[in-house]
Length: 160
Image: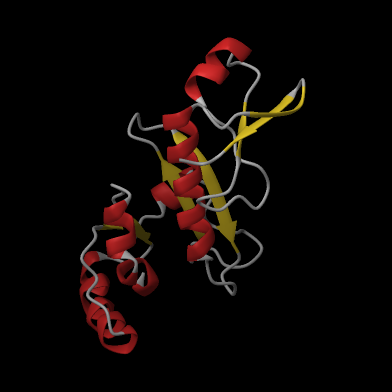
């Protein structure tokens, strides 16, 4: 929760709204939020869902039955503006989330959607992107001035 709060500006720059889910009650949230802010030098401002009943965590398989019956695993759901889950990442309780990867995935999804491109492995902003075959060669040449045809089935361009 603290690292999510620390990345508030990164999420805002991407027009992304973080939302937390905790198997604690609101009363418990209020107790530990101040501790998170103090120990992690942050200001947690995003909403946190009270899931003390575990109904949401159970519905989305966020309780690992072999580890603990009450503690949620560290799941990340990236949901687009149309309320479609675009990516799910689940970490064990004892492994922290990778926020560089979470932000990279958000960037990738937004660029892929906006530019009608696909992103190769290990893509980072500024790297070349793949022009999918669903874009005709005529449209690709018009839309992507830096189009490079590596193979008839593999076309790349700069990430704008």
